[in-house]
Image (tube, rainbow, N blue to C red; front, side):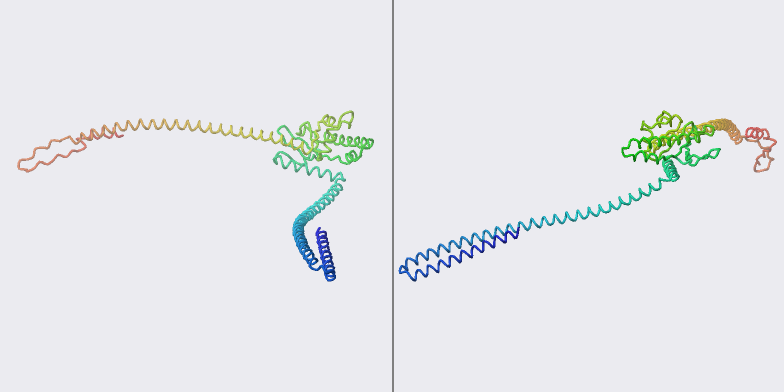
Length: 386
């Protein structure tokens, strides 16, 4: 846009130069004609008029050029501002794009890393033994997160040496839980890609694998004679495999759907979600049993307190009787003490007559009171005090 404006200005300048050149040539011709013509005054007037007109036109053209130059400058400035704003916006956009590209690069690296991890996990899951160990690990972790330590056990061994992955200890007995991971033929079902024959064949093999696991659990781990309940749980650590068992109706074993076949053999399939809900129910029951045990312990303690209170009541009655007897004895002794005090006070009033003094003696000596003369009084006092 700036190049276009410069081009316009250049064209305007060229036109002005051409106009000035033409006017100069015209003036020279008029001067030559004036020299050759005798009508000099008239031509001079015409020349002056032409010069004035030329000056006016030049002034008008200069004004127009100045106006156009101002307009062009404004347009250039506005264009520069617009271009600057757009460049700033473009720069910000480029920076944002670069930032997002950086994040996208990190995300791509994470996706690639996850892809490698998934590939490694697939390699691990190819081994049935490793799949079984992984299922046992998930099962133990879920039990440890929910149930108290004393209410479950892992690797429980029966009398004949068979070992179940875990048992849940309830009030009525043990609930065996065994982890199974039938993955191989399940992959054939989901990888059929619309091939009905391949999907049907994979479904039959998958149903056969599940039925074999159900039979093994029912035969090995449901043992009421060793304290288990009459059912067991089959823990499947993958939700999609679990739903394949309980939802699909086209997979049958001996004329029964997979779920019906498992329930007939008293084996209940569970997934991580359903097993979590079952453990929460068990936990609520255990809390109820704990509350019942606490209530029983509280009643026993209350009975002990009542027995101690009865004993305290008996002792309190004995103490009351003793206090009552002591109070009676105190009152009796107080009465006797009052009587003795009265008698002792009476002793002060006893006067023993003195013997006549021989004539000539100036004073009469007082008589001496002996026990013989007051023996009865002292005996009564000792009897009262005693």
